[in-house]
Amino acid sequence: DLAISYGNIGQVYNNMGDYSKALEFYEKSHKIYEKALPPNHPHLAISYNGIGQVYNKIGDYSTALEFYEKSHQILEKVLSPNHPDLAISYGNIGQVYNNMGDYSKALEFYEKSHKIYEKALPPNHP
Image (tube, rainbow, N blue to C red; front, side, top):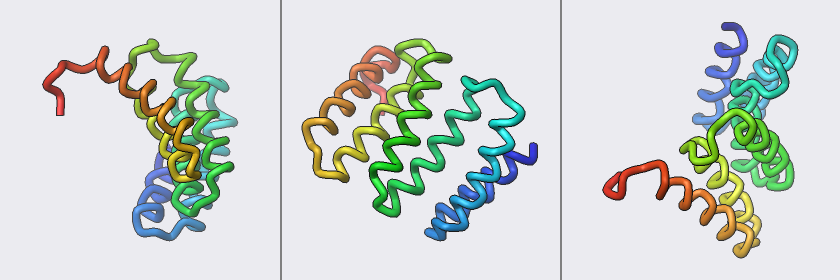
């Protein structure tokens, strides 16, 4: 519960644009998760993703990519191959490559994301 609370506070700071405070709270949350949970627990993936979001927003794309990839590796182990959360994860990685100007890599990950959505969602899903 404490880790969730720290993560929620981090999310608010992230939304407010106070990225150093967001990282502070996301990292507090993550440290608790690392001690309390097995290494492939989905909460760790969520935690890595939040940290990656902050680094993406501040323009530290290589670090954002590192955290998004850690998150994705966990999700690949715990979710089915066509789970929508994997599509979101591929999209996040694609966004970083897009921000870096590596459009061919961005397209590769956006297409992976799209293929999952095509399988997982009905054709008229918004």
